[in-house]
Image 1 (spheres, rainbow, N blue to C red):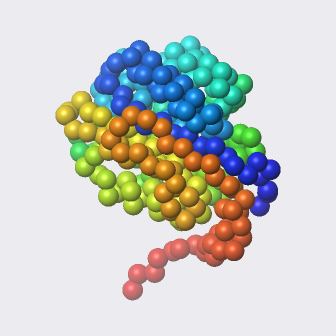
Image 2 (cartoon, helix red, strand yellow):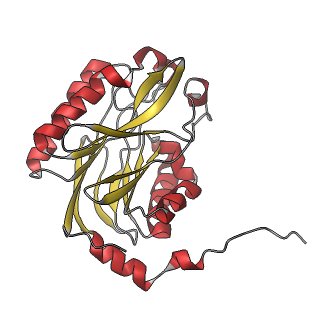
Length: 276
């Protein structure tokens, strides 16, 4: 493993209540939350945002609020904040149109305010009355970004139920895993269990970030975001309010732990099941 020269990597995640369909208001709210928390913590190396913070979780309205990435108001705001505060932003997700297709897309913006990568949600949630798959096109591949020499594996919400994508990131050298979600309050046990498991299984720092607040059908987002370490310990967390969670992490300690417990070496090439 390489050695990160900067011992303290500053991680900030923003939990927000996105009002359903209130596109302009949500952008203003996020900008205010970003500015307030970056000032509060004296900046950050990486800032993470939740899924569909621009419009809230309501797939039926996704088409009317889709943006082309070249002239996206949401991305423009994030570029400005990134440059002003000299921070990298893993921008949650917005609804992006490309031709006749829509994607649930995470924009990644570097310290210079440049869009350097996007990740399109790979798994679409279409159960229990939700129908994301009726509006959104699946992404084709996982996307790991490298910023400041640190590799971050990005996932969005329902992706958390597929440990294969997280293992693929770990094998590719991920230092930090992120799940950026709008997660329902009725599913707290799966959220807490799966996000912690992804950190432990892959010996990685984990950003488990969701929204808070009401959904269109009167149910609620969970509002329990966490920053977890490579052993599953909670470094910071927030309950059902808007705000930021923050941690300074030493990636070299994670590398030392990985080198003592080299689980990747014990993975078998095949797990073909024999039925008797």
